[in-house]
Amino acid sequence: MQASRATKFTIGGFRVGFDWSVVIVLGLVAWSLASQVLPSGFPGHSSQAYWIAALAAAGLFLGSLVVHELSHAIAARRVAGVEVEDITFWLFGGVARIRGELPTPRVQLLVAGIGPLTSLALGVVFWGMALLLAQLGAGSLVAGTLLWLGVMNGTLAVFNLIPGSPLDGGRVLHAILWRLRGDRTRAALTAARVGQGVGAILIGLGVLGFVLAGNAGGLWTALVGWFVLGAARGEAQVAALRIGLGDSRVRDVMRTQPVVGPAWFTVEAFLQRFVPEHAHLAFPVQEFDGRLSGLVTLDALRRVPPERRALLRVGQVALPLERAITVTPDASAVEVAARLAMTRQTLALVLDEGRLVGVVSPTDLSRAIALGQSFPRGRGAGPFGPVAQPTAPPPANAPPAPPPPQGAAPAPAGWSPQAGPAPQGGPAGRGGPAVPRPGSRET
Ligand SMILES: [Zn+2]
Image (tube, rainbow, N blue to C red; front, side, top):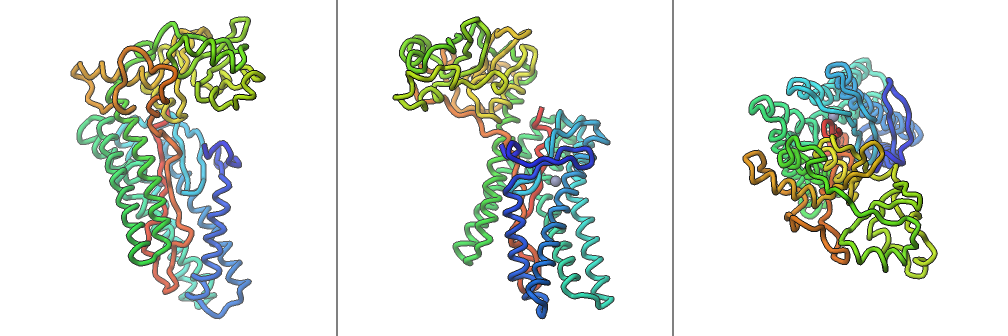
């Protein structure tokens, strides 16, 4: 989501995107430094000097975050030979999306652990430079700015080591549990559950801090917690899917002979004459010449205002084929489940050499998991909520199907607009930065 509107660059051979929200957060950081933190910690300079120092600090902080994410990406590429899809920076920090999976617990430990270590090293470097400058008696403002950067990077390292996925510490926990138990998926589920707990605790602490102490920064902590909770929940759902679906292929879970709708119908005709005949929530649609053209959902059809329904054709409101989820029958069922979850689409199209041979909906996956549970293999909770009727999909006029799990929204990662040396000069004691790596969720 965030990636789509991000401005992209290439840094060190990696595609790096910056969402517009980065500018806002950096602006807030600079404003807080220039107007409060630096003047109270290092008085006696002009406001111009504070602003120059603050902007430089904000820029170097963003640079530190980029170095942190690049360390994950480089480790993944060098050590595991796993490519990195892209790195995106947005409101809550950075996310490096890794294509494929890390092969062993050791590699996972290394790729996850290197980020906090890098931040720690940066923190030590900035802190050392600040000490050196202070010893030389040079520019207290410059030394103070470097000290702030040192503290921020240290905070980033510590926060990221909190042991709950999707934080780096959660990946480390995953690696350790994986090694101990020898079961990658169950280890991932545990790490994600711990992440959900961490998110809930952050929300609680943030809200308490705000209510009891009037600490506005508590709201930021709560917001970070909320994103950690959401991302960890998504990861837990994907892990549960892996446990439930095991090695199933798409051909094992798909519904064959799907009903294909006419894309040339008007929305009105489609709703009146086609939809009532078929109890589905989404339909693949084809052109008059038989060419498959996309996917239309009842939601999309219903969103067309009644007065326009006779004017618009179904093909005009359908999701074009290139944006629909298409898979082959041999693809892994977990992969299609994760893609459905991530995009929140209601149907995946199964194509064999360009021919539509089946469809997969969340209901089909829930059914496959439920069936799997009658065998010793599966124990995963139904990630799509209560398992629906195992036979027919919900009737067309029923409320929308249970939503797919909120999947891999870019995992949260945070930096605090006001974290850093408090006016007193000490580090702000608020939870702040997190730069998790959603890693092996991407397939
Ligand atoms: Zn990281």
